[in-house]
Structures are given as structure tokens and as C-alpha cells.
Image 1 (tube, one colour):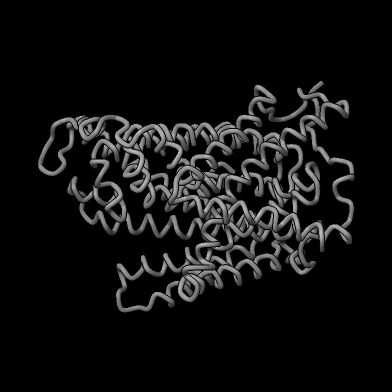
Image 2 (image 1 turned 180 degrees about the vertical axis):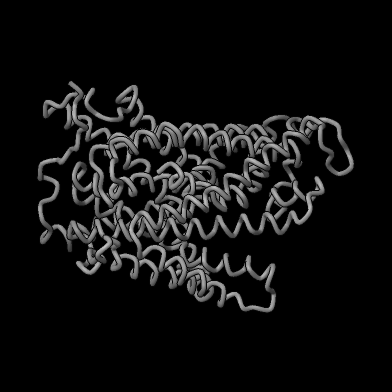
Amino acid sequence: MFMIALAGVIGTGLFLGTGDVISRAGPGGTIAAYVVGGFLLWLTMSCLGETSSVMPASGSFQAHATKLLGPGTGFTIGWIYWLSWASFIGLEFLAAGIVMKFWFPDVPTAVWSGVFIVVLFVINLFSVRGFAEVESGLAFVKVAAVAAFIVVGGLVLFGVVGMDGQTEPRWDNFYADGGFFPTGIGAVLAAMMTVIYTFMGSEVMGVAAGEAENPAKAVPRAVRTIVFRLVFLYLGAVVILIALIPWRQAGLSESPFVTVFEAIGIPFAADIMNFVVLVSILSVGNTGLYMCSRIMWSLGHDGHAPKFFTRTLKNGSPYGGLIFTMAFGLLSLLSSFVAEDTLFVFLMSVSGIGGALSWITIALTQYAFRTKFVKSGGDVKQLPYRVPLFPAVPILVVLLNLAVFVGMALDPTQRLSLVIGLGVVPVCYGVHWLFIRPREKDVASAEMEVRLPAMQG
């Protein structure tokens, strides 16, 4: 489960998007943004770990929200989170086809996109075992690439290995051009949405818990290991990038990792990084299909989506939700060409805001679970994983995400995305109130099913 969560987080946001964060926030702002983002990730995964370890469900926090916060909230966050992932699946396939043209320039992009669509669709027809095996392999490639970059970059930083013909230690880029915070502290808030977006995907741990053999053991283990290793990998890579590339130039390169590898003189640097980017793209697409199909199954099970989405194969794979997600992903791919200024912008806005709203929902769900569990006479010591410093942790998750929204509101370039993304929330609640609520079953009033591990005696 650790590798699944790791694969869901390390993606194109790190390999392609980090340069943009550095160019906007500067050295100190970037480091601060990733530290805060990593801290928020740990807080959120702690909340998800407590609920998923005793309430495993394929719908993860969407199913928890329906049970603990009400059907309206479950309906809203389920569709927003599904939309945030499904809207970019088609674009990931397009990106994979474009990357393949680096090696096969004469083969049309659509051919490679079609090949990857078929391959990942077939993989996701299998149970969590097939998905986990593929994601573990993809995660290994990405982790190995980041680790190698940190090691080689560290040698350059301390002057052991040369770069651009020089072997002196490189520390000037941290302060030489405008100081440690050249764009001001406010740039940290402006960059936080991008940073949080790069950490999105770790929620797959909760989805996988619904199909794991022993979530009471697997989930706590994943929570305790994923955050610290992720923060080490991300911060390590970011610090190296800041040290080796002037912050004003970081956003000008398609991938700052390629820039560093080529400057060091590593053979086939472009080939290596393009392969890693391809793996990252396919990993994101694979994770997205897996998560979306399970979320759709949960929505259908609760009466929040057509019953077709609850159909599964004998191995348990929800093929109804998988087919619908794939179809929508292909439509989002077409939207990037035929409705670039309308539908595409809308989907992109929902995707970024949807991730932050999901983290807020995870925190509120854990707060509601702990409160109800204690009131019903439950012993907190029996929980396989307990959120520390309750209720401070879930409250802090909500406040930090709201602070990110404030930062977006103060940034003119992100204000429209914030309005569009948050505007979907009342629309979803309205749809639920008018069309779903009158005929849905009462899932919120049902008794909360909690699986506690057997006590040792």
C-alpha cells in the first residue's frame, strides 16, 4: 500500500511543475511551500489513516463522508473528486503519446495514446492485486530517478562532481539574486496550490484499503512511512534544483531535471528523463482510472449515480465505473482541442480545487468519526491508528487549506480558477437536494460499521 500511495504522488508535478514553483516563489519561498505542503500531507494522511483502518471502503473518504457528514456532502465530494481526476486522464494519454514522439517522430501521437489507453484499461479490469503490481513497478522507477538525482546533485553541490566545467561548491543560488525570499513571503501562498496539487494522489491509500486483506495493519504502516519518505524525496530534489539552477531560469526549462543532468554531462540525459516522465504520466493515468472507478462504484451503491456503475466482474473490478471514466477522459482529451477556452479551463479549475476540498472533507470526516465513536462508548485505544493531538489535527487541515484559498483569491492569475472550482460545490448540493434526496436510501442514519482488531488478552 505504501508503494501505491507513493506512485500516486510522484508524477509530472515534480518532474515538470517544480520549475514553475521555483521561478514564482524563489529559493526560500519554494522550500517553505514544500515544507508546509509536506506537513499538510502528513496531517491529512493521519486523518485518512484513522478512518480507513477501521472503515475500509472502495469509495474511501467519499463513502465515509456519506455515512458521517450526510448524503449531500458524500454526493458533492464524490462527484467533484471524480471530476478532478477523470478530467485529466485523457490529457495524460495525450501527453504520453507526445513523449513517445521523442523516440518515434514518424508515428502519430494518436497511435501511442490509443495503445496506452488499451493497456491501462485492461490492467484496471483486474483486482487491486494487478493494479498494485503495476503501480509498484512504476513507483520504483520514479523513486530511483529522484534518488539518483539527489545523490548526483548532492555531489555537484559539494564540488565533488563538476557542472558546466566547474567543480566548486554551489550555494550562491540560494541568496545571490534578490536574497532567500526574492519574491516575498506572500509568494508562498501563491505557490501553495501548485505544491498541494503535486502531493495529490496519496488518497489512493484509502481507496486501496477497501480491497486490502488486512487494512487494520496495512493502513497504519503506510501512513507512518509514506509522508516522511515523500517529504525527503521532494525536499531533497527541490533543494538540489534550487542550488544548481538560478531561480529565474527554473521555469524556462521544460524539465529542470533534464537541465541539470545535461549540464553535469550525463549521457542520454534527455532520453532518461523522458522515460521517467513517460512512466510518471502512465502512473498517474493508471492511478486515476483505479480511483475513479471505485469512487463511481461507491456513488452508485449509495444511489448517487446510475446503478450501472456498481456492476463488477467476478474479480471485483467495477467495470461500469471504469468504462464511464474512460469515456469521460476521452471527452476531456477532445475538449483540449475543440473547447480550450471554456470546458478545458473549467475542468482544470475543478481539478485543482477539488483536491483541496477532498483534503478538507477527509479532516471533517475524521473529526465526525472520532466524535461519534467516543460518544457511542468506543475506546480510542482500540483504534489501529489514532490521529495525534485530536482535535487540533483535523482543524489545522481545514484552516491550512482555507489559507491556500485565501492566497489564490489574492492572486489575480488564480482568482478565476478559485471562483469556478468553488462554484461547483453549491451546484452539486443543489442537484442532490432537488433530484437525488427525494429518492435516495437513508445511508447516513445507518449504524457506522467499524472493524476493530481483536484485543490481545
